[in-house]
Each structure stands twice: as structure tokens, then as C-alpha cells.
Image (cartoon, rainbow, N blue to C red; front, side, top):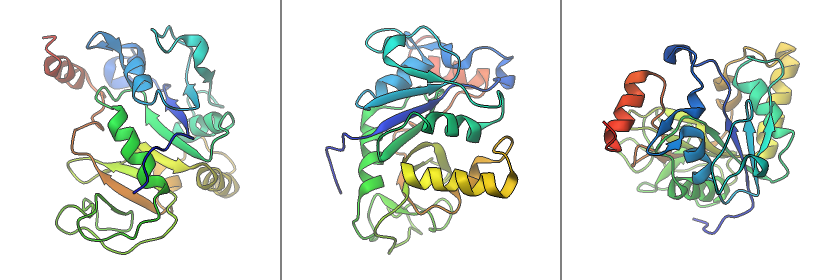
Length: 235
């Protein structure tokens, strides 16, 4: 496995309407003394470019608003693929980290694992921390049912939660793979608006990285927010 990966950009998707939270500014919600967005920015502080797709927001040190490249999807509210396309317009690195803005437990260690797996050419063997996306659902190679064998040049690496679900907004991808996929979907549908994210990621060869720390936990509901604050000793 490769270590010391430094040449990457990060795209954080911070749009959406947060309907299940009553329409509040979800990335701006504060947990553990920081906003959700600030916590995600901190996890990918090593990125050459920090790109946030969403309305500009105040950001505390060390990530000032001026250090972040802000952009918006077109059309507004078009979903994750238009947002990703907008972010990719600002990407210059060959490797891009893609994160949702509502991951309170995302950390630098998980980011390093994803980046290392995304560029690894190691052969998949039983007992590895990762398996190709073609492995049985819910079965990274370090758990029963994991796969062996795989592509030498994956399109990236995706975090897999405790229930065995891939988390494509907690992943690292080869930039060219994402751009080619978006071009394909645009040709098929005439637009990226409303096209499901799985249509982009399903054809990709991804190394599946087990989430042993719960860093893929996201805040979709107030119950989720309450659980996070309780875990951080705030309630």
C-alpha cells in the first residue's frame, strides 16, 4: 500500500436543501465546537485545493473562507452530479477526494487510507483492508465473504460502512475516471440534473475500504445531530 500521498484536491458537497432538518443550513450546524463543514475541511487539510460546492459560509481558522475555492452547481438544486461537475472544473490534481459536508467524524487517518488505496496497485488478497467494488455487497476483503483478485489500476477507493453499504461521498477517485463518467452520463441523458450518483460510480472499479471508526456517519436528521452531540459530550 502506498503512503505519503500528497498530490490531491478535495471536493466537499455542501449544497442540498436538508429537508429532513427543516431546511436549516446543515453544513453550518455546530457540533463539538465546530461546524460540520469545518470538521470536514479539517480532515482534508492536506489537499492542494479545497473546493466547496455550495454557498460561501464563514469558516474558522485555519481554513479561512479565502483559502477555500467556492463554486455552485448548475442548475441550482440539480443534485450531486451537477455539483460534482462544478467542483471538477476547479480540480487540477490527478486524484480527488469527494466528501459530503455532513460527516462529523471524518478524520485525516481515514482520508489517508482512502487516498493510499485509490492509487495502490497491490493485488487484492484475503485479509486486505479493501476489495474491488465487484465484491459481494457488504463484504470488504477483511470480513467474511471478501473478494480476492482485482484490477491493477482502480478508479478509486470508497468507504464501506458497518452495514456493508458503499459511501460514494466518502471516497477518493481518479479525476479522469470521474470526468469520463460525467461525459458518458451527459451524452446518455442530455443533462446531469436529477441523475443518481450511483449511475456514475457503479461502473467504476473501486477498492472498498472498511469504515472501522464510523467516519462515514452523516447527519441527515435531528436524531443524527443529537446522537453526534451526545457522543461529543454536548448533551
